[in-house]
Length: 282
Ligand code: AMP
Image 1 (cartoon, rainbow, N blue to C red):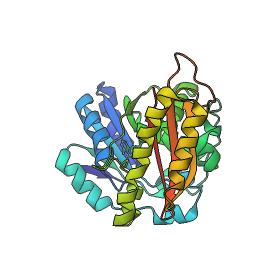
Image 2 (cartoon, helix red, strand yellow; image 1 turned 90 degrees about the vertical axis):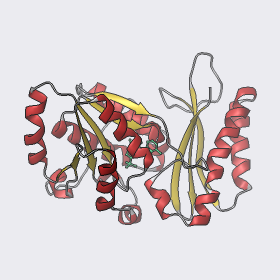
Image 3 (cartoon, rainbow, N blue to C red; image 1 turned 180 degrees about the vertical axis):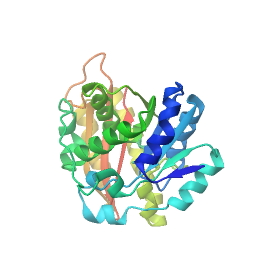
């Protein structure tokens, strides 16, 4: 396994491969790897000649200093986990200065309004940070294909929009949400939960699945009310939002329209840790 910390070394390594028309798969992550990340990695390894995985806790996408500080950083263990899958992965683990060159600020992005919904509303500046890092990593790596999880569904749609708006020649592949045995969506943040909270957090997916059943027969507002009431029964959670939105525009909806795909999106706090999840509703 090749571990590189400098973008100049990575570009120098990859550029001859690009010239030989080798396909480069890319999986961007913030590390503290779990099986969800590894599912993206496996898909890239299957589909490409070369796979690059980046591990970089991107400061500009955090709107909460405490969350950034507490974000788990476990590079050594991450490399071991990757090594169990393949020894031919290229790991890019840059420093903040390698990426930001002393100017750790975001560029500003507009993604046709996708940035104003849900995570964009509740985490001001978050998608500017995401756009900044993803665009820079694409410029350095020049991947043929990049893999993103549906766990961060809004991010996936925003990255697709970024690529379209800036005409970046990369195919974006969305990958299904990996869950723990109890249904909790895998997340690096789960590591910060107590054992008890991790068990209780299984309710998030249980409630989402029940919401899906409600949505089949009932209205949007009845489904939303159902979810709110369910969370009121669980005082250990603080529900930040539950929204039902069109999968493509991410605009929340009040009525069901035929031929549209809807998804339920949720953000909840438990033990002050913010967890997000989503579910396809039809
Ligand atoms: P992160 O390290 O949290 O920034 O995530 C890196 C990539 O892994 C993103 O594209 C995420 O959407 C994806 N990812 C994170 N958790 C999961 C999961 N449970 N299942 C599938 N993909 C995931």
